[in-house]
Image (cartoon, rainbow, N blue to C red; front, side, top):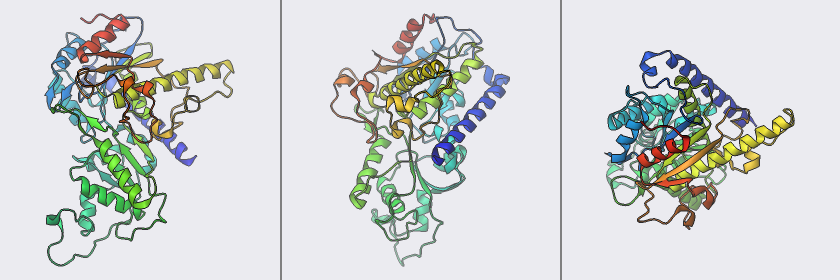
Amino acid sequence: MQRIRSLRTGWQLLKSSCEGAAKQVNSSPSTSRYYSHVPPQGSGSFGLLFDIDGVLVRGRTLIPAAKQCFRNLVDSNGKYKVPVVFVTNAGNCMRKTKAEYLSHLLEVEVSPDQVVLSHSPLRMFTQFHKMRVLVSGQGPIEEVAHNLGFQDIVTIDMLREAYSLLDVVDHDRRPKDSIPSSKGLPPIDAVILFGEPIRWETNLQLIVDVLHTNGNPDDAWSSMRYPHIPVLACNMDLLWMAEAKNPRFGHGMFLVCLESLYKKVTGYDLKYEALIGKPSVVTYNYAELLISQQAERLCWTTPVKRLYAIGDNPMSDIYGANLYNHYLQASQRSKAQMQAKSGGGGVGPLAETKMTSAELGGASVVFGAEEDLPEGCSSILVCTGVYSRDRQELPSEQRVFHGHRDFRFDPSLTQPSFVVEDVKDAVELVFQQEGWPLE
């Protein structure tokens, strides 16, 4: 119960800070320039959630349809007609950096508050922010962790330097002469896995050391140290699409390795305090909050009723959007039940949909049915990334589960609402569904 209270507090703080920021930017010329003050032109209001890799880009190469697509999403002054948020499982940079990259690539202005990275919801996990955390990944992860609220950070390189005898797979990196004494570090309280590292063997070895010694990697391994210290993982994508003809290993593959090694060494399952990023519900709820703020900046007087999530990965983008849609449907039913009972009792979305804590992102009961959530979230699968009509069977016919170990294999969740060729077709479909003019 203490963890749930902490998460609820973290979410409310995050929501309050985001709403406060939204009020500031509503009156800020530098941000209001992004949004066109035009009321909804169709039957209702909606928002768009875009994946990036495999939808807008392949590696560093822009997918041709993307640029035309975004020309249609802005007016003659370059301001957005509808709320747009980019939801990516990438996490090796700051939101500002990703926004600048997208602005340059798409030739439209993208602000940081339109970007959700895999680690963005970690802001709400305030109960870990004062803990001493070991971070794994690549890029400016120490800066990223500080930006998210973590105050006491240890990197894998810092751990290697303090305990020089731990990383010995690469013979060239072993101590050459006398064996140096360990410098020692205070115990590590939790592990944050931001994304795939460069040297997998180093990170795998040292993370297992930390978990098997209760955060004191200079101690001897002990089977008595279970359950281990908390592990929070971002980005569960097993595969992702770059310039190569076939998908590349993602952070989900690193997690498979870590889980297998930990199980082999200890005989126990690796446990996660939180699994964040697509397809977890917490990530979509965070994105929806940003969509709602943009609707306010567009001067829409009605709440956003529908979300459309556009992605290329059936096991991540489509699964996540459909899972979130189930959550929204359950929330609507729960709200109706409570209204029928004049506010008494009611069944929560978690209980009704039988979602696991992992599927919710480890943040169960953070969002209440009283929130003014959208009515639904439709999933749109494009054929320019992980999924391709030419080389892959339809998602509903797949027999191999590429999702995370702690998520259910429900084939219906990998079935998209729509399948289109590319992102331009996806946006045209949405505008047609909503009765909006594209021009």
